[in-house]
Structures are given as structure tokens and as C-alpha cells.
Image: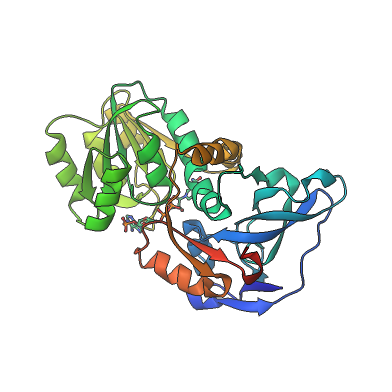
Length: 327
Ligand SMILES: NC(=O)c1ccc[n+]([C@@H]2O[C@H](COP(=O)([O-])OP(=O)(O)OC[C@H]3O[C@@H](n4cnc5c(N)ncnc54)[C@H](OP(=O)(O)O)[C@@H]3O)[C@@H](O)[C@H]2O)c1
């Protein structure tokens, strides 16, 4: 079968299309024939070596694939064969025509949702929902959603008011993304490509404060935001560091301002993310959450897809489609 092999850590060119043996379903596993493979932002960091991969390359790359179950291993219900699902791997194996994954990792795709849309929306919504639940918004609060036009930020922007936000302030890079964030439901959008964007935020707030920050950028801007947050209920939920560094926020920064910081990562967090999956796909099928798809590219263009994501041009997910997954 065709697969994308990560030959080492480095630039997008380390992702190479190769013929490899098809996987077999081990105990507790299924194999799916993949139709739609989402290119996820954290995968670019795994490929570059910034995040640990868990196994040494060369290996078949990729986290998630949507498709049809073709094989089940021992201790797995044979009734799963033929079901449309999104499978989550343990961190590698998904950029391929056939993908082995734990049967426990499957999220079933509702009839009215395409494999491409399921692949594009699952991660975004599944992280956004536990973030919104953790925020426990009161109905009168202002939230700040960073990188709001795409990915998890796009799902936060779409769902925030339903989960109790009164006002959604967003950041996005450049006019096209600002426009998209507005269309998704942001009341105000600030361009985070402006190095002084936190000062601009303060001007826009005009003395008002932000109750909840969904922090995807991390780094120095996270610390600058503390002075526009509402004491004592102001809470920052840190779930990413797009800037390249985690939020530069210390305990004393928080204590002296009466604020809280919640880290939203790690195994228990990821269990909550996995639990949200079926709700997300049901919502997407019913029109309650929009899948944003930038492009569907042939599987062998995985390196191009990573390059595009790192250039920050896409306005939605790039989804890879194996030749055998074209129906
Ligand atoms: N904790 C979790 O459970 C979890 C799960 C998945 C992902 N994540 C993390 O969440 C963050 C967002 O991931 P995603 O999948 O939602 O990404 P995404 O929106 O699909 O893609 C990244 C977006 O971030 C923006 N960006 C890139 N570099 C940036 C920078 N230096 N400063 C500000 N914005 C930047 C770009 O938008 P602009 O062009 O508008 O700047 C780009 O559209 C990442 O840090 C990722 O690792 C966390």
C-alpha cells in the first residue's frame, strides 16, 4: 500500500511517499481503509522534532484517519466491519491507505457527514468542547479566542456563545483570517501579527476586562494579557504554544493579580478530548459546527500540505486522500 514515511526529523521533505506492507489488526484493533486524513498542526511539530515522537523514524506518519473498517482483530466485534469511523493512532500510522488503530479509539461518522468533513472537524471540536466546559462561562463574560480563524480557535469561536460567552474577542493573522473569524461569530478581531496586539486589545477594551483567555499562542503575549483580565475570576486556559514557547506566566504573576491558569494537556485531558468526539461529529452532521476544509490533496502530497500549514496560508484543514479512498 502507499504510505507517507517520516524518514527523520526535519522539514516537510522528510515526509516521503513509499510502498509499505499493509498493517494487520492485532488484539483489540481494527484496520480501516482510509478516505480522508487530516493534517494536524501538532503533527508539524512532531515532524520537525520539537515534540517527541514516541518511536524512532523511519515510520509511517500520522495521528488520525477517517474511513471504513475492513478488518477486526481478536476481542473486537466483527459487526464493526463496514462501519464509517475516524480512527486515532498512538501517534503514527495514519498517513496511509490502510491504518491499524485500537477499536477503543474509533469515533463513528454519522450518515449525513462526509469522511472529509469528519476528518476536518474532529480535532477542532473535540478540544474546543472540554475547553469551554472547563471555562464554565457565566452568561455575561467576555472571552478571548486566539488564532480564531482556523483549527481549535475556529470551533471555540463558533461555540463560545452557546457555552455562555456574552462577548467574543478574537485574534487572527491578516485580513482574510480576521474576516473568517468574524463570520464564525467573533464580535471583535485583532491582528495578532501586529507585535503590539495586546496593547491594541487593551485600547479596544477601553477599561473593560477579559474573563477567560483560551491561550493557543503562549510565550510573552500570555503574560501581557494578565493585566487585561478580570480579578478574581479571570482564568487563562493554556492549550498550545504557537509562538514556540509555553505561556510565560509564573505563580507570582497569577497570585498577585488573583487569576488562575489551567494547563489543558496531558493524558487525562486527552481522555476528555477523545470523549467529546461523538458529540462533535453529531453536531457537524446537524449543522451545529462547520467543518472548514481548505483543500483535499492526494496522499503523496503530504509534504506540500505540511509546507502550506507552516506558511499559515490555509483557511481550513488540509485533508489527504489516498488513491484507493476515492469513492
Ligand atoms: N491541548 C490540546 O489538546 C491540543 C490539541 C491539538 C492542538 N493543540 C495546540 O493548539 C494550537 C492550535 O492548533 P490548531 O490545530 O488549532 O491549529 P490551526 O488553527 O489548524 O493552525 C495553526 C494556526 O495558528 C496560527 N499561528 C501559527 N503560528 C502562530 C504564531 N506564531 N502566533 C500566532 N498564531 C499562529 C495560524 O493562524 P494565523 O495565520 O491567523 O496566525 C494558523 O492558522 C497548537 O499550538 C497545537 O499544538 C493542543
